[in-house]
Length: 268
Image (cartoon, rainbow, N blue to C red; front, side, top):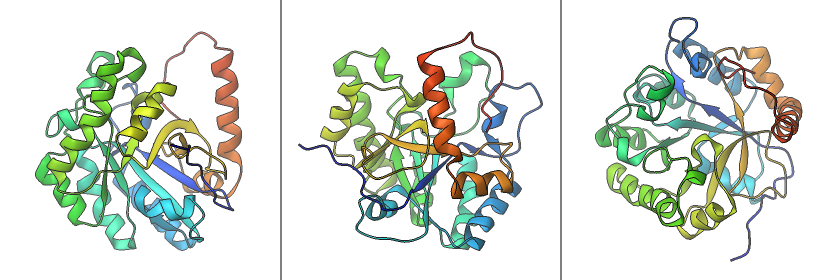
């Protein structure tokens, strides 16, 4: 099967969120990945005021492949937190937006157990009825593997099971088709692209920073992080300029020439 690529004439931004909740106390691990409900509401209002239409990955696909044109932005949530349903869904519905929430199929109704070893507070994940509520509210469920797996740490058969099994389990849980995938930790190899394609996913998103330009692999789409420190001016910068493309290029350069790790969570 030929590799599918984007054909959008203008750069398209796919926003990445995690938790929509008040941040834990200062010093907590990955505190930057929390966006308060009030900040999220302001951000969605800004998108609407600027003339953007927020879209799930399935709704965004026609724009990515060049079949449609318009002022759109993808909205994604990683991990399937219950606070996405509680705090993001009403705001999305108010503006007529759709979004994709990438859920971890074996941990539905549990917590973010993959973060426990690094001291991140445990937070509730949506269970199957709550996922169905999300879908009934006009939103989409995507797959984030069965166990939030680091795919490159697994053998071929286990990796394939994480990718394929998540789709089947989530479709049963939410009662809707699951055709969108997200690599946990942004961790994958070339063999996993083939697995994602074979499993029937039409797009897959990464943690690589940047806007989507024409010619990008639909199974390796970059995204734009929105974190606790992202104010409205910064969000506009991320949307309307090449800021994220430059940050992505900088991150790639740093990855190729690593320095000793330092503490702290995600930021802009």
